[in-house]
Amino acid sequence: MPVVAKNPPPSRADAQAERKRKLTFAEKKELEELPGRIDALERERDGMYDSLADPSLLRDGSAVAAARSRLVALEAEIATLTGRWEALETVAGGG
View 1 (cartoon, helix red, strand yellow):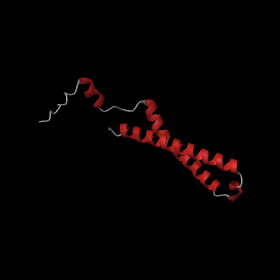
View 2 (cartoon, helix red, strand yellow):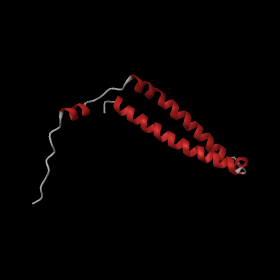
View 3 (cartoon, helix red, strand yellow):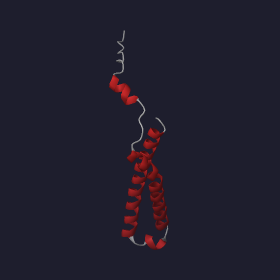
View 4 (cartoon, one colour):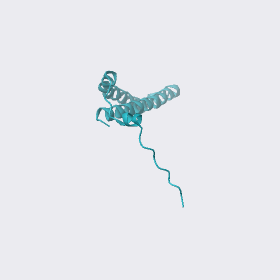
């Protein structure tokens, strides 16, 4: 017969951690600014894609490499900021 481990009752610290928290002033400000920052990066990314479609750029191998490198960095930054924005929205919405 398998032994089933019982979950210990939640401690006071666990209960406090689960309690809803509010955004700090700095987090509120960050939350307000994130959509604009993400939008600016997305516009830059779109511009990079447009540049890569230009045949004159494609003749310059180093420019193509630099553009692709910047695209990778933009995608990573957009993903990071979007994740942060979602996390702050979750806290602001009460969990």
